[in-house]
Length: 366
Ligand SMILES: C[S@@+](CC[C@H](N)C(=O)[O-])C[C@H]1O[C@@H](n2cnc3c(N)ncnc32)[C@H](O)[C@@H]1O
Image 1 (tube, rainbow, N blue to C red):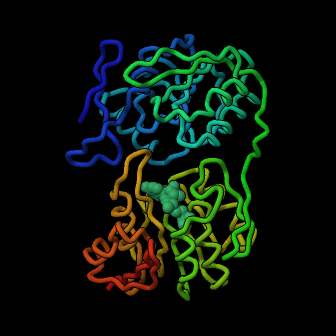
Image 2: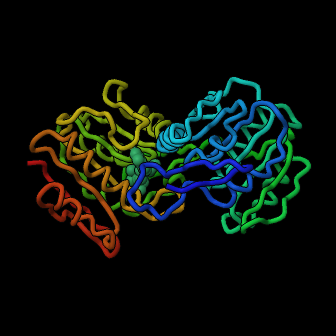
Image 3: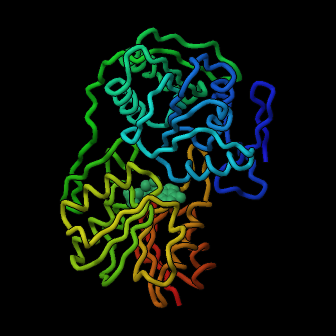
């Protein structure tokens, strides 16, 4: 467990889920700078993209609205508030649309995707008064070269702070202007023969993932209940339904933009009672022994960190929710050696297809 000192007070903070001997911290130099030097007015602050709740914990003496697309980030926030016995006046929301309280200032931790930042600034400019102060924080190495142009386009009075521990803040004020970026991106996915809609923070927003392409070319014939675990924009469910029009789909993702992208995409091809899309951390809380198939293209990073803990969690949860005799079919980069994990959990696995970079594997719950 690590400690972050904010204005003389020590905070205990952990990433989520907690990992034994995790060398990674739950905050970075940009969080530290935001907490110690944000210069925002008194009153309610809106915090965006605070991955593990460090900003909310450090500002817990003020009323807060906290918006994060990630289900895991919401779990991290609660964990770290609990670790520090903090019970702030806090609205924790999955999307800006859900905001109701008036906001006096906005803190934005720079997200990985500038498309998401642009969508957030567009929303703020359309819905909060011009002149509302905004501060954006990031490590310098995470600041893309196009950030100054974007902030000048969507904020007034823009000025950067000096750099501290290789992090920097960008101050500005809302101005009412819009970027012109569409609310969602659309591209035609040839293997499923459908135009796919993508909200700003969904994985694969601009094109088909190469692993997903191989899995789409090697989908099983199925009957019954299929779980699309880590569904992104729902592309695997679309492929599955094209080949198996009778299947029932449960699609799950921890990203709210993934959930709403999948809902919109599946609604174009399936009846409402044929699919359900759920915002969750893997299959937490889902009853075991009910699925016939699980399809999965697992992530191999969490925020900036490369990790295999999500793949482990997905494979364990897949095994638990499968019926006896049910099967999981997954795709992964060859070098990730998922066959070792599947063999350890399921007692064996079969290679269904492979190419130079990816492999499709299947395992059965016995
Ligand atoms: C490699 S992408 C695959 C997306 C889509 N299925 C495809 O094949 O293009 C992995 C997906 O897993 C989701 N994810 C990451 N961690 C998760 C978790 N703990 N629970 C549920 N979904 C998660 C990500 O948001 C992302 O959409």
